Image (cartoon, rainbow, N blue to C red; front, side):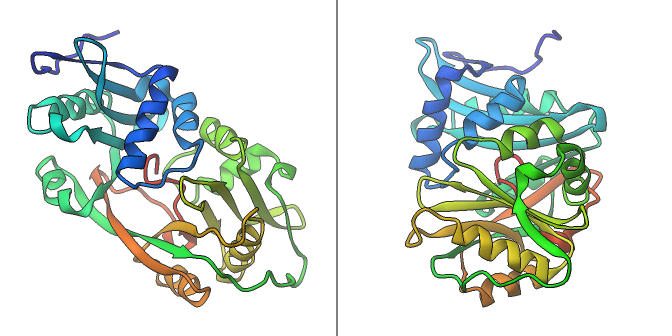
Length: 296
């Protein structure tokens, strides 16, 4: 392993996270009201543990974290779950965490993140550019699922080959991500649906319980009509129909935003999708909900 060149402030250290750290990370996201899926953090850790870093005091107490998720073959990275406990901010530990995570991407073509809008200018100083806003939508009451037309069917996601799902997903995410998808769709309490026509995938989505209500992500579809069928079917699958549903949608996809608003959803917050290097090539017209702001 190459020795890190990052300088860490006196009294702090940075190490790779362990499973014992994950409950602490989840508590930090809860305190910040990020409303992560109940099982998102263990799933992210399981798919790329080396990129999951913890900053801690000399007694081992965590004070910060960051994930630098790597797709090494395609030289694509994503930064997420970047947190420093409030009383330890302004002491250099956040900068050290950031630099350590970015070391992994020194020769990468593209690095992306979803940043808090208030910190957008800071990320720009680090060479990142804004590509769009991700709008967080919330809805509680949805129209009833509709009968699908033609030869399309809505079936459980587990009924289609993972290899086919990876190919379809790569139209809407910058790189193929088989290992991640396999873990994401099989995470505890996650439920996925896929729209197919004669064996061909037209769209898919996953719903999972969160700290508050449920999260949908991803929701990718070739057509608005397919996305609508999947959205309503996923919302209808909730074990508690009074619990809200949240999802994050690119503001530049006006068709997606219109669909969500006609389905009774409203915008409650936003963040900035940013990149460094070459902008990723994706079919944004088919992104009705990103997978997670923590992992892209």
